[in-house]
Length: 73
Length: 380
Image (cartoon, rainbow over all chains, first blue to last red; front, top):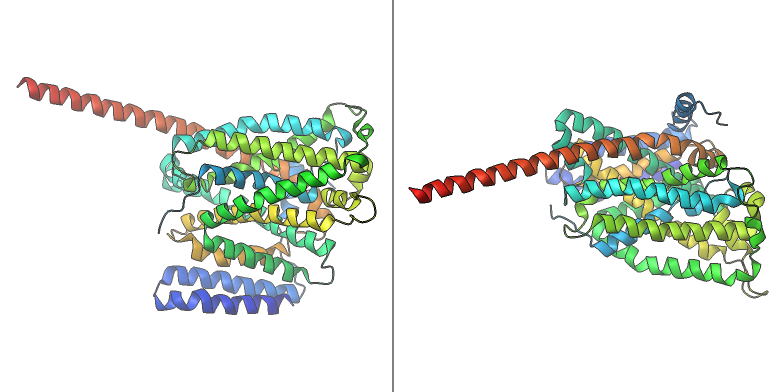
């Protein structure tokens, strides 16, 4: 479901933003935009295959526990 | 690119709605129980100090946002490094807020809808708001703010008969420690979160008074939070409150007049979603500005769209479940936010004071040199 959602959104963004950027030959923003779009689609694909993606929540929780000596559940 | 400006009133309203933000979803601290109102007052007192620092930074360099300022104060390399750290914070909290919103909507009404759909559609709204720009967001909030306030006060007033103020007693039964712990939590989330406004300070009118903006926003936002906290405790009691995942929302479910006016929690849900939407939009706006500064792109608007969708898509992976999300927001975030909400602003403030004094000295020296030069010319 996530993959399909990201594909639909990416297709819309390509039509709305990427095509005009390509025509205006704004290459820098075109490549940065494309990179993020690709990342979004990859995230959608990984989510549908139930691949675990590292989240910053647990490392930050561990870091805070370590630095401040807290016992967090 | 044309510079966007929001006036003082819009800035105040934006900041108040920002402060209301996610506190209306997960509520305020859960350790102090019935003494939460004392914790809120202590947090407001503490926040007034750090907010004075934020306001002073904006006052010293009006019309400039934090990212422009970092370059000017710390040079290119160190400035970029601090901007990178701050942008990470904006991204991480933005992730958190989108997850809060999608989790809240999923739990209260759309339980059969995949979370990614809710998150991505929230992303569509945020991306659209960012493309319209901060001026439109400012005007939109100016329209919705009175609605939020009127509904909230009405809900609180019609529930007066149901309040049991004995639930606010005994005062300080568990001592001052849990109160101070919650006060620290409320200080960091949501009051000191207004540090984000340093990232969009360039959009404030030059003649507006940042101290006034921060102080009024703190007062109105703080009073709103106080009203919400007292209402929740007086209606549910501290034990029931601590059992709920979204206490302010559940409170509205209890409120009723007779048998004909009840189950009005959806009205409250509209307020919650509006306030959180405003908050996450401000975060994403600042994040887009930070990224466009780091990547040296003039137009943040075009870049903001993929950034918002990337954040929305990644928010799905942020927490394993809603319980961990609430625990993280209440227990981890206040400590995690210290470098971003206190240390970086203090460093920027000290550097800004030194820079402003040096600039002033140089200007007065130049003026005296010019005037002595012109006097000598006249004597000749």
